[in-house]
Length: 140
Image (cartoon, rainbow, N blue to C red; front, side):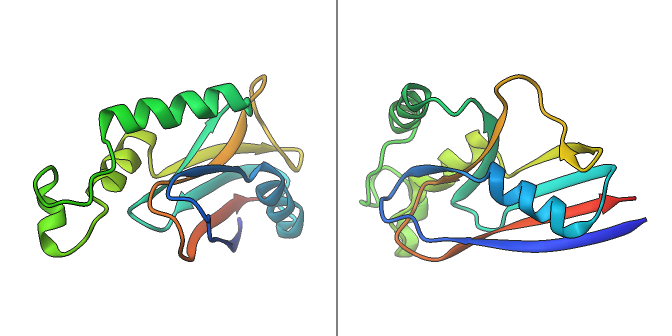
């Protein structure tokens, strides 16, 4: 069995945003030379997410509104106890928890083995700084 790692780096200029990283992950699979196996895509920061869904702008706007309704940005220490530590991103931790840390996708014949319309996204909830995503591919 072979293994391959690659890190993707992001710096989203807004506090919250989504980036389609499917092509980046597909490139990593091509670089790996692995034809059949599994691909883990993991947000390596506690205020960011990786998820699979449709690449449709209305859906992404719905996610932003829905997440903001569930965990609104509020830098004050009155809403989030986490902000009492001097941080201002208590909401971002909650948003990440809802959207998830990582995804695992089958690799078949050197390609991501997706269902209809599935794409991989990096979700940022506390942007304006460098963060990374790990792509780990294992297989033959």
